[in-house]
Image 1 (cartoon, rainbow over the protein chains, first blue to last red):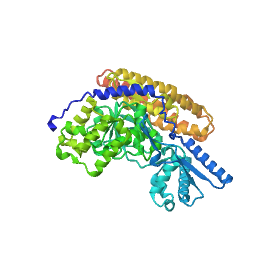
Image 2: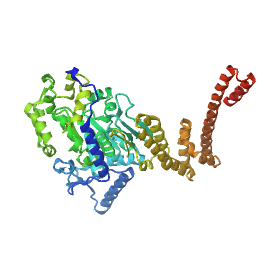
Image 3: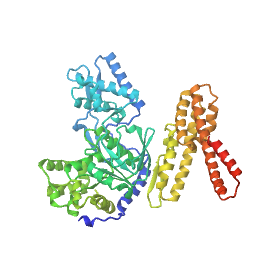
Length: 397
Length: 172
């Protein structure tokens, strides 16, 4: 089979057509903002100064409560699953308007409140000094108080919700995880970084995205890869030279910085986005997180989701189409079946008939396959045939 | 982003001038230098190259130079000082970039502030060095011609020696 791989450059006409449409639509809708439904919480991405203002307003109101009633409390939107709403129009997971109250004078919530105030104090310090800290650093700022990093992480998300802003606006960032390579030039403060000239590893997506700005690109599409192994294959083939694109990966589950960066480049450059994930429920779930956000961070979805992302592969129907050998297919286990059924119950999957059909086919065949299964036809099959052919024929969901 | 169309239907997108207004003052110059030296040669289309060159000139005239002049002409010593530090670094790397602000730097050597005077002199020294390098290159070219002429017996030993002397004085 490897001898059958086409070596010439494909005319990726379907992707080019989508690129021209994206460009046209992007220019028309450039000024339009996402209009959220009335019954959902609106979150703002704020500058350092505006975030500090919100902290000061919050603390002022707490002081007032102390003077007036002696029983201060904090009210914040509930992040329980019952309060997560799928906005069909914008294809986003959002937070509803259920409000919870944390009281300072209650024994049940006193530990929680103290932790919240500690995180608020740290955020205030970071913003005043214009510094960024990781979630881990926040945990180590008061180990005894937090006890476990799970508690400090939860407080960080609570404080962001409480201030009605994104976590990035609080200057608390996750560790760098994703990487990006291809036809893109950016600036990180005063340094210009060429993402074509950083070797095979590419640029590690900075969690401090407020310092990053796009300065030049001649890419025509963006390719999101689930796995680093696929990234290595495409980097080694210098895929973006033949097909002008930007490639990025979060090396597994999509982290905030990668999702935010993807949203930024796709929106600013008005480029179509394709994802290449394993043909299994986990891969499809990763695609869905890029597409419409995760439940845990639903309050930030409008700033993290890329609603137009297309699922390029690996689709279950590809296993037959490309005649992936049986020994490269893996039988689904009970967890895979359960997760596939859960995905089939999601509104955003039901809305997309092609996606629903592909997942139903996976359930019927009870098989899954990794992107690497395509290597059965040679290491170059992914870069010289599979991806270009799909981009040429428009074979995506 | 500012969009430039390629002949093949592709595009090049460059950051918009409006955004550059919020940049640190020396950054537009670095941007111009970067695109000119690294990216222009990668665009195969000559019309595209011309359009982008024109845009870079606009960035220089509308954003980069006015930004620097505003700071250098202002009364905020701290800001002027910061700007001069950046200009000094740029002048050492690529003098042509900061050429349009030379008259403003010349005015600053008369200021009372010691640090500003020191930095301004350092920048002017970079201009002087660049000027000398330019003259030396011209002389070197003439010298090579003279050498050829001397070897061909077209000029006398005395004429060659004089040309050589002029060249060596400038070199020192």
